[in-house]
Length: 456
Image (cartoon, rainbow, N blue to C red; front, side, top):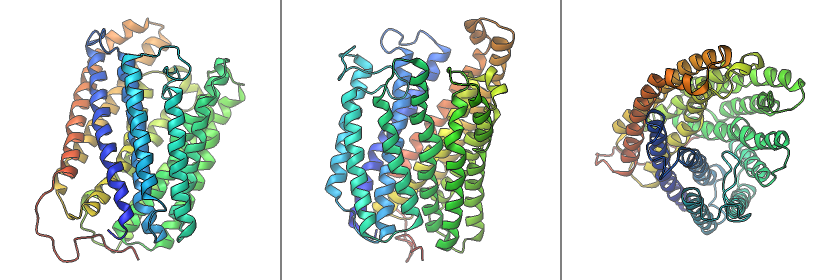
């Protein structure tokens, strides 16, 4: 480890992995409720389980992004972080906010209270005081990393990363605006949900993936930066107006059907470019890096993101198709594989690369780590196919034939059982990953392998 302030990332990654465990266990519980609907219905209703599952996903991904930024920015800027103390304070605020949100969701002690009660908008149900805390933590983070970058060396990776992180924080401000008109509410709600995951998060993903390729393959920085600019340009060009594919059926003007269809079709391009980028960098690379698990996760991230976010997104993004499929299990198939491929795998890739360096034990237990990749990737891929078949049948029976919703649910129950089995395999893989990262494996370290090889 070159810079002492990079140690901050260790705390972020540790909390993120803890929330990752909670998130996947919550997902498994939700999957069980699909096959046994009355399970815990009086104690922990399905809507609360789902809320915990989705919120913990978002929070742990954000903590992973923050940790990644605190790890790579000192190396890229060639200076220590502006204020490690501020970074730890930011983490404390986020942890307190997370605990407060969980207590509010589960026990609902302040129902209807403007400041303390939970809100009803999906993914941003956090109470107002938690949202204020998130904004304060985000401002602390942006000040910290921006000051570090301004005082140090500027690179394409830090520039794109900062652009993504600033966009992430600014777009979250729309969570405070809740108009009474439902169509207007949904229009602004998608400013957060879509422009995060199909806009600024893609910038963060591209910059972290570029950093990993730089370190793991040894390709010249100039080559990596050219690819990075092309990917980012494609992501912004397609992603911003691609928001229109969420505007089809919420009461907005009809021209959004064409804008949404055309531009969201183009959203496949940046994900294909990221996959091509990762494999070309490895092919051109001249470095045999000892951390093979990090390389596997990086390539897996780019590949699964292309299929989950790109291909499965395209399957139901055209308005003529979406008219029948929106809100079915096809949406769930796309959402699960897209999030796992693009962002979960990205965080696990940077954690796999950074943790051994932060803990001074490289190489480490990579066999278990790579086994966890195949378990998670296999489980999620099978789950995606299962939900796709379920969604196809659901679309035909419910949207074409006009059968009742619950009758259709009974007809596709077999797919929910298979989804639960796939989820169980995924959870085993996730817990195996955490074990592989947390528990050291005593190996003889060859000279020169104790730390990562310099990029230049």
